[in-house]
Each structure stands twice: as structure tokens, then as C-alpha cells.
Length: 207
Length: 290
Image 1 (tube, one colour):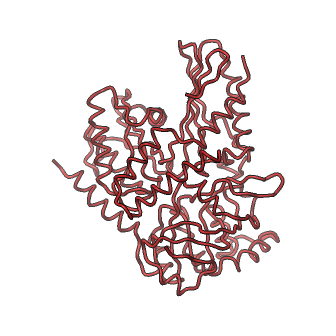
Image 2 (image 1 turned 45 degrees about the horizontal axis):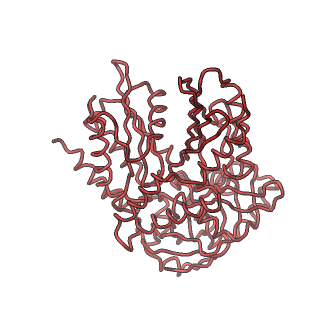
Image 3 (image 1 turned 30 degrees about the vertical axis):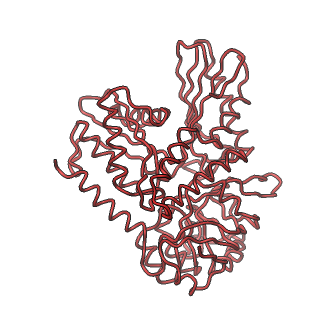
């Protein structure tokens, strides 16, 4: 078991290998479909003019994401009316939808860990080597258990995207995950995909 | 007619927070099949721990509480309009109480309604009048990750070598499992409809998910295919979460339908391991959650 504290140094990222179980502590940011599209359009490709609220969010997020962790998660949050936010259920969402955006977001911010489920594709894997970054797989559906590792909700940005799509800044302790894509080109997802394709071809071979 | 809003909120709470026993038992059996110390076994340990925590604390098992799909079977004389209103009010209340995540997003504007109420299809409610004196309501909460890996095949399918027969069905289903990898939160449960049109076929595949796990199809031919498909899907060794391992699916549930001479659809609804389905029965003045 590797204990990681965010922000994570590049040397610590390079020391991780596919299959390593980890426990993460520190501040991370949730971000999924709408968040990635917004980051790309507003701050990376700059095809959209940022509003003051966008600038404010960017200024707050940039230092958190340098050596930081982005978590593909759309939580269930209690305390919406009182703004005494509390994460009730917070498992990962499927990461592959962010494949078109992830590499550029990782490069731009210098993200050390992308957390989600289901794995990501070759573009992200190449960026993992470059930045360096690891992809950490959390257990899909383990929402109650993961929510217990969220000690505090520190801030929320772009809540107009809706609760699941907003960027939540959270402080976690001992958040459990497994390295399934490392900074050396290793991907458990590519391995399992290739092996299962061989099995499938046998099962579908003409009788 | 009595107001069932509170009873519906309780049905939603139970569905979101308390995994059915047959599913939990199947997950336990899957855990035993995985090698000690493997990532697959670790994933199932975490899953089982999470199931217990969610039940104890009455919090959602998974944050993606999905599309609420209600199957309502009612005796003659019930107002489906009133039942729809009560169900919709209950969904909004359950969302405010954090048993459900606000999930209804306007596909055109991108705006989340905030209370889980969208158009007439969100939540989805199917009504059927029966001769039974009880009102029976089944609820499934089906998340987006597993819904996204569902698939529909029009046979014949040349690339798969799948013709218009049960061998073709086998080929299509195994292809769907391979394409899903771990992305539907394996080990999953497959509801598969054979026949129908594109719409009725997918709808039927979801209804088949109401069948308890391990209950074989009454047609021996389909029961055999269900067993074979389960074994063969597990031979793909995609494993829990796609980590590799022996448990890729917990079960396959087939439904045969009628079709047009020109059409032969195989519709696969993939349900994640968090197979949240619960039933409520209204018998006279009593509300039961069997």
C-alpha cells in the first residue's frame, strides 16, 4: 500500500506501477464532462471568453491542480440549501468520456493523478508519461465508502453546471484506489482488453 | 384513492440504499472465485463493504442513482394520472433528502432541473392494468455508466458471423460484453431481449432485469443459453471493474419477443453490480416491501 499526499512530486508518480494499491490524502478537485469541456474551451483553446466568475475559479483551481488530483465524480451532496455541504455518495464515473480532453488538461495544469473508473485511452496514456501522471482507478459504485474518506468540502465552482457536474474542492483522507495506468506506458486496461479479445475470438471461432 | 407519496419515497430510499439479497449473495460467491490478494478480489471486498455501509447509514450505494424506472401494475379503477403525480412528487422529495442525485439534464439547454423531474420519460413510469387485487410497483435505478455500454444488434451481423438464430444471439451478447470491458461496473447483470422493434426491444430487456438472479428461464432452450452465456462471458476474464478476473457477469437473463419478418434485434441492457431493484405492494390499507 502506497500512501500519497497531494500535491504529489513527479518522482513519487514515477515510482508507481500498474497494480499498486494507493491511499490518497489531501485536497482534490472533482471534474467530469462539463468541467473538462469548460476548461478546454475557456482556458486552453480559448474559444470562449471567460467571465469574471470563470477567472476567479481558474485562479483558485490552478494551484490546486499543479501536482494535484482531478477526480471524475458526480457526487450526491447534502446541505445544498444551507451551503453546509457534505458528500453523501461519491464514487467514480466512467473516465473514457474525458479521453478527448484529458491529455491537454493534464499538460496545462501539470496534474499528477487522474482518478476515475474504466480506464482511459492511448492519448491519455502518452500524456501520463510526459507530465508525469498516473491514472488511479477507484472502485465504481463504492460511493458510500468513498464518501467517508471525504473529510471536508472546501469550495464549489461552476455549480450552475448542476451538482454532479460542478467542480468540488474536497479534502480527503485515505481515499482508496489502484494504479491502472502508470507514467511508464503501462496500462492494465490495454492488457485486459487485448487478452479478452483473444478469448472472444476463440469463443466466436467457426465451429 | 390513498396518497402514496410517502410510500413511494420509502421505496426509493430502499432501492437506492439497500442492495437486494440475491445480488449481494451473487457478489459474495463472485468474491470466493477470485484469487486471494488479486485486484479483482480487493474490488469485490470494497464493493461488499460499501453495500453494508450504505445499508447501515441509509445512504446511496452509488452516487449515480440513475434513471428511476417504475413498473406499476394496478387493479382496475386506479388513476394512473394521480399515481404519476405521486411518484413524481416522491422522486423530488427523495432527491431533496439525498437518496437520489439530481440527474435530469435538459439535453438541449444542458440545464439540470435540480429535482430529478424532467419530461414525461424522466422518471420513466410504465403502467399496466392487471386482474390482481394488489397494486405492485417495481423500481429499478439504472446508472448512466452501465446504460452507456448497452448495445443493440440487428441480425444478421456479418462481422460477428451472427445469423438470425440463437447462435447469432450468443455472438452478439458476447461481443457486447467484450465491448463493455469494465466500464459498466462489472460484474454486471445482462437483460437481453430478442425480437421486437428498436424501442420495445430495449424496454423489454430492462424489464427482464426484474427477474431474481439464479431463477432460470422457463424455456429450457433459453435457460441453457443463459447458463452458457454466463460461463462464456466469464471466460473473457475481464473481471470486476475490468481488473481481470473470473467474474465478469453475475447472470444473463433472456426474453423472447415477436418481431417483424424483416427485423431481428438483440438488445442488451447492461446493469452494473449495484443492481438496485425493489418492490412495493399495496394490499388494501397495507403497504408491503417484500
